Length: 179
Image 1 (cartoon, one colour):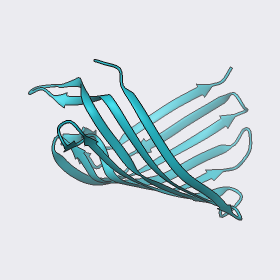
Image 2: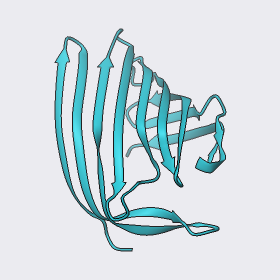
Image 3: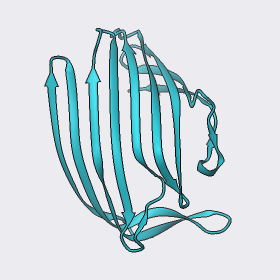
């Protein structure tokens, strides 16, 4: 594989009104030798796409509606094209919408958590478009500034899409120690 190189442009606005924050940006990436995957009959291999353009729009909104609770929402529109073959790039959603509610008790030995729904519209893979969403949950227990235990559940609704290797509900557990 050849290394990727890219030229990227991003133009954005951010502003706050009271406790509420907003973000709007446009991005454009010209990529040479994009590292991508390609189906080879019975397996996938990594390949270079000679020239690709990935552009889109991002919008974000955040509002802490209580000292412990925050509402967030984001939307991303992505148009990714292989400029050499004039086809749409795989493994990208044209529309991604995420809504979440977060909790933080602001104690060094306390709890944080997040419940979010991620919607993927027109996720392009192997020449087909898929639309799906997943509800997810994450909870953290803090033990001072250096130890964090995380437990969570991805895809609470147990959505399965074999073509995308979405195999249903996934539990996870992790620990982070900062030295």
